[in-house]
Image 1 (cartoon, rainbow, N blue to C red):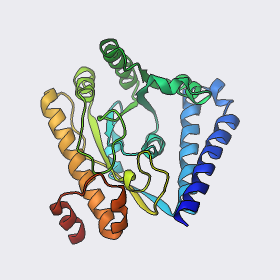
Image 2 (image 1 turned 180 degrees about the vertical axis):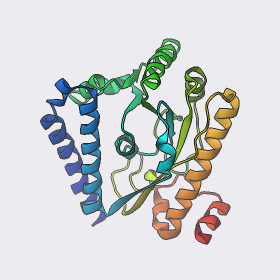
Image 3 (image 1 turned 60 degrees about the vertical axis):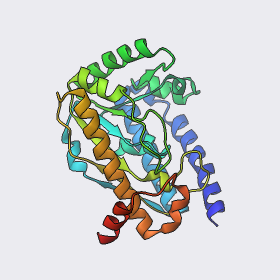
Length: 262
C-alpha cells in the first residue's frame, strides 16, 4: 500500500506541476508578484495531494519570527519538499539556487521571470560577488532571501556540512537571519521514492540579529538549526519509530528522551 500510494503521489505531483505551469503562463506577463502567487498555489495543491494520497500533514511553528522584512531565511535542506513548501509562509521572497535549474524547460523561465538568484557554482569567486549584489538589492526591496546553508540536500540525521556562503551573505548584506529547522527528510527522503505518512514540521527559530561577527553568526546558526532539527526528528521517531528507515544516523539519546518527555 505504501508503494502504491507513493507511486500515485509521484505521478500526481508532476501532473499537478505541469498543469500549474501551463495554465499559469499568463503570469509571465503579469510580473514577479503573480509568479510568486502561482508558486504558492502549486505548494498548497501539493500539500493537499500529500495529505489525501500519502497521509502526510504539515505543521508550521514559530511563524511569528517571520515578521522581519528584508531578511535572510536559512533553512535545513533534507528534501525537495521545502523548496516549494517554505514559499507559503512568506509574501515576497527570492531563492538562492543553482544555475542549472534555470535551464529546465518552462520551469526555468518561471525562475528567471520571478528574479530568483541563480548562481553558477563553477565560478566561485564571481558567483559570490554576484550573489551579494543581487541579494543586497532584494533585501533593500524588503524581500526575504531563502538560502540552504549546506548548499544541497542532506539526509535526515546526516552530520552537518555548512558552507561559508551564508555567513558571507549575512556579513555583506547586514541583514537579520531567521534559522529554520525541519524533519521533512523522514517523510520525503532525499533521492527516495516512498512517501511515509505522518506530520512534516517546520520550525522558524528566533531571529539572529544583524551585524554579529561572521564566525559567531555561523556558530549560532548551525547550533540553533541542528539542535532544533534533532529535536523535531526525535519527536517524530517517538510517534513512529519506523521512520528511522530514512535516517542516516539516529539522533543523540538526549534528544530522544526530550521528545518522549514532551
